[in-house]
Length: 315
Picture 1 (cartoon, rainbow, N blue to C red):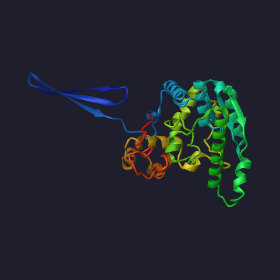
Picture 2: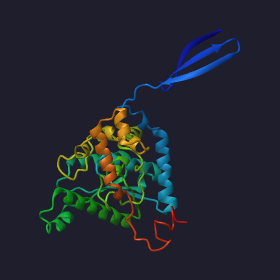
Picture 3: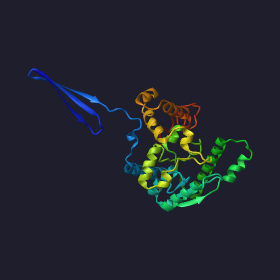
Picture 4: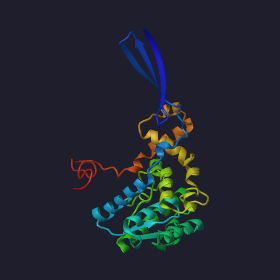
């Protein structure tokens, strides 16, 4: 005798598995599992969800190790812009080093938003850390008076680099290590000024997508007014990150998640992602690869620094 029986089981991942059992005669039975995956949802953010308490603990341990044990510093200095990235960085540094060992520096330009200054101060007050304001207008204009035709991009780069001059000088004055604040999405898009935003030697947020920065910020209690406002570099009046990108952070992060795992643009489009969004994200990553590397060295020997010698860390 023979017959076919079927039953279904749904896993916690919502994958439908259907078993087909075929009985032949009295002794032979075969079981064939047939798996039906649900339709892919390009809007699903499940892959970007983090275990915020665990990530927070890990980043605090990372900062303690990198600042104190590896580099011999007991203090940190953070440029407080009033945005969520620098705010979260200040929160993590305070947890790692204690409020008495974290210094916030506000560095406004004459066109900077007053809201940015207020939010930076709100972070300092919430954490109880020291906060100093150093105006960069005179320093920036001291150079730009020789370049009156500089466009907004050049002016923004000069501002960003002037802020790093101040941060590193304050590092020397305070014996405090400068801490970077750039997130993974910005780094992959090349959305930073080379040898400015990327200059600090330690960066706790560099492997967190922007959407994950928001998650961790809410977990640690960064003020909601900061977490919820549109992200902006505040280099140009009315500027926003997403306006510059041409795509929202959530959409970009979902595409980046798969691109970095080797999915081709064609495959992402077949999965349901918007074709123009995929091409935009892929283009930004491909054209900014050079910004994520140390300066290229002309190799003449097998001891070329950062190519062979002392790699991957100094021993």
